[in-house]
Image (cartoon, rainbow, N blue to C red):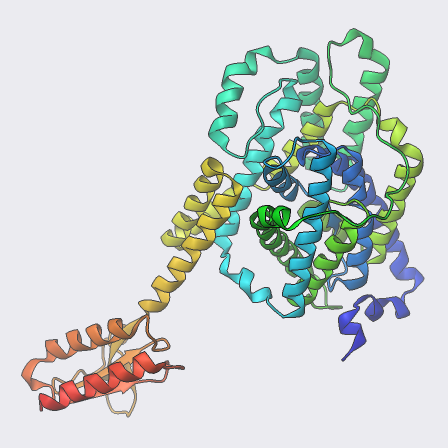
Length: 514
């Protein structure tokens, strides 16, 4: 066994030099500056105290830097996983309570264990059953749900939190008139500032700018503002080691949400990793190694009070754009989070929650993929409606049901397509021994007494009746003139027992007609 394949950090660390460090240092600091306010914000989405968002940025990043096959993917708390955590755990405990926190940490251990086992047994292919349209529909719906849920903090109104869009919209409609003026003004200015700086240059730490702006406003002018909710005390210090407590019943209840997190987290990481891989030649992303790395990140992270983590689209892109070459950039981000936890948490006391809501809303609304929807409409109607079905089911029935509908429809379409493959009659090319598709080559010769039938797929139980029915239909068109049937089996790369029996039965049937 090649130890470097098992522990990818050994591929780049022995040859590490100053030229690599310069890019990693800038990228690590840039991502760290973005990660700290995002971590605090995403913990609020998950229904956890802000400090837990920073805990997620420690050990999981270290584990991924050691075991991850991508050198630029940024691991940590993300909005989508945070909302899925909130959705699953809120049914079992009161948000923010000790029980809620312990269940969220246990969920990270469960997610990590499933990911690690899948990686060890090379089961990464399972997630391939989530097609691109399903992912587009699911992520767009979740982004919309996250954004709408944050209007409670943006406007200073205690709207209901839900993963069903009609429930949120109904409550917003009934209570929106009670918005807090000062909270809303600070939140909307923060949104405008973030969008402004993003349009100028995505490398500008817009999240940090609005965080500083919000803290200064509430610290020096807070007395003249009415009821602007602030983060208040964030404990200092690093997380202590502890093993999550659990029972079998809890694991059974958490399993559906854990499987959702496994699939979504892995897909995010692979899609981000593959897009970054295409921009360089130094390494290749290995899907099963990514599962192992994510699994260890969540398992070991849960021992240090982290809730489920995965890769971030925005931070990974910024990491690569800022010059990151290796996992050292992630370790530099970890150092920045450690410094914040040890010395800087008191500075976040006056941070308005509306500023965090602004950061989240701008970040997640960027995940609503209109371009992909337009492309699918033009390219493939079936894929477009698959995306719409996943999008609507996630919006109106919730995250778990959305992913179930998406996977279910993907499998149905897969079965439909494999059970009804392309078939055609071949004709002879004039003055040659070649036979070609009569629908594509109009000049081919079709003889009345010969049928050359081509079937473009494996022949198995799901499509053997389809094969038989279409062969019979073509033979019937030839009528009494038909003397010979030739099966072009070049594209039939596999045949099961049902297919064999069907062929035997058809041979006997046509022999009787001679």
